[in-house]
Every structure is written in C-alpha cells, then in structure tokens.
Image 1 (cartoon, rainbow, N blue to C red):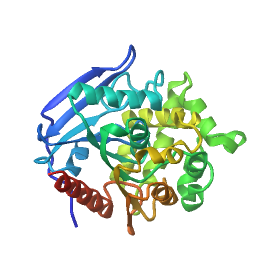
Image 2 (cartoon, rainbow, N blue to C red; image 1 turned 45 degrees about the horizontal axis):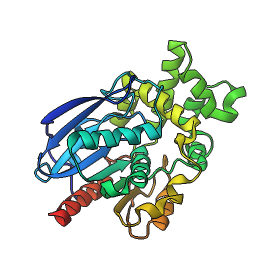
Image 3 (tube, rainbow, N blue to C red; image 1 turned 60 degrees about the vertical axis):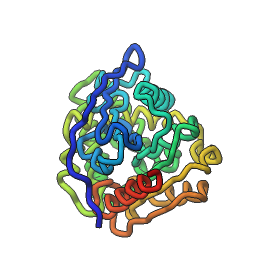
Length: 316
C-alpha cells in the first residue's frame, strides 16, 4: 500500500491580491520544471497544510497550493464579502497566469472536487486532468443529507451534540439557524457555533474514530473559517445553478478524470461519485472498501498516490 511522500518545504511563496478585500496565500514546492498540479482544498474554508504537498512525487511535480478566500494564510480571515464560487474560479485563473502555467492537473477532494469541476467546466482548455476524492456535487439533496437529515441517523450521538447548539424551534432548518449564529455580532455565539459545526464534520470524516482529525477541526482558527464560509456557501446553494456540475459535464468529457471515493463516506455518500461517473463515462472510479471521507485514511491515500504517480508516468 502506497503512503504519502516525505515532507517537503515550498521553494516559493506568494501573496496574490485578487481584489480590494482578499489577498491569497500561494506556494510552490517540488520540481519547478515538473508537471504542474493545483491542490484544491476542501471546505470551503478548510485551508491547506504541509501534508497536502505529500500526495505528489516532488521530483516529478510542480506542486501549487493555495488557501481560498478567507481561510488558511489568506486574508482577511473568515471573510464572507466577495467570497463566491465564481470568485474562486477567477482566483485560480489569476494564479495560473501569475505562475506562467499553460495547463495543469487539478487535485481536489470534497469541496475541492466541487471547485475543480466548476473550474474545469469554465476553462476546460486549461485542465490536463483531474484527480477527485470524496465527490461533492453541492446539490440540495447533498446539503440536506449532512446538515438536516441523513447522516444524523448514522451518528445520532454526534448529531445530538451538534443540534444542542440550536433551540428546538429552529431545528427544522439547521443550516439557516447555524448561519444566523455564525454571522451574528456576538463573538461568543459565533465561536460556539463554529466549533460545534466543525466538530460535527470532523467526527464524521473517518471510518474509524480519529482524535487527531477532530482536534484539527476544533482548532478555533480552523473552525471559524470553515464553519462561517461553509454556511455562507451552502445557504447560497454554493453559488451554483441546480445540478450545474452534472448538467455541464459534457464540457469536460474529454479530460482524463480519476475518482476516488470511500465506500462508507458519510459526509459525501458514494451516490455522488456514481452520479459523476455516469456523467463522465471516460473517468476511472475507484471505490475504497474500508474508508470514509478523509484523504488520510490508508486506502484513500494509497489510491490517490497511485493516481498521481500514474498521471506523471503518462505525461513523461
């Protein structure tokens, strides 16, 4: 079973001012003359970490990571103004142009798969291929499953703690209730809601309980950005038209695509991967039988590293 490549450090870091409000953190690592790959992180609002560089052979890849608007090392932190899917797509194009990259591979998981698909459908000529993990289509049914009714039946103990943040009279629309608190002027209420939201997601991310994952999600800096930005996007249907990603899949059917999905993914049930696979008949679908949602579960990691290695060989 393949594991992550060893830790490496960036050889270049950039601050890219994309509008009057937002400045993005962008970094490059690996081989400056290697195959360009953009790591598209999840959330939205999740940010990047050093471990995200390690899915790629550093001798073969020019590895580009960036923190999307409002999260990670991008500023201002947890900012919702000007934070839309269309803005993020435009940011990716600015990064590509700033770095002088003609085409690149997109590597995205969860919300990163959503944004990768949206970018590819907008700029198909810029995409060499896609490696997508834990496919998230951001449809109404997908949001309802995790934030209202569905995952709650599989993790009723964790859900009970999540819903305790919200008065009984508001629990018929948990997303709206959380959004109200996450955007309020009450700092204590914002932080309490952010931690409850983020911990719910962290607890559901892995097949086996993983305290390290939950601890990361509960970190106040991480939790505030992730909860606020996710709620902002999801209350606005991710700024996508209904079923947009599947509707426009014909634009990217020529692009080589590898889909990796955990059989027991509770955050993004595997039905979403199958729906995308049906829309992209040229894609490869790899179902990991002993995994949930996290990219760092052994079977998921193995499949992702195999995919990046294979793509590098095919482009050599």
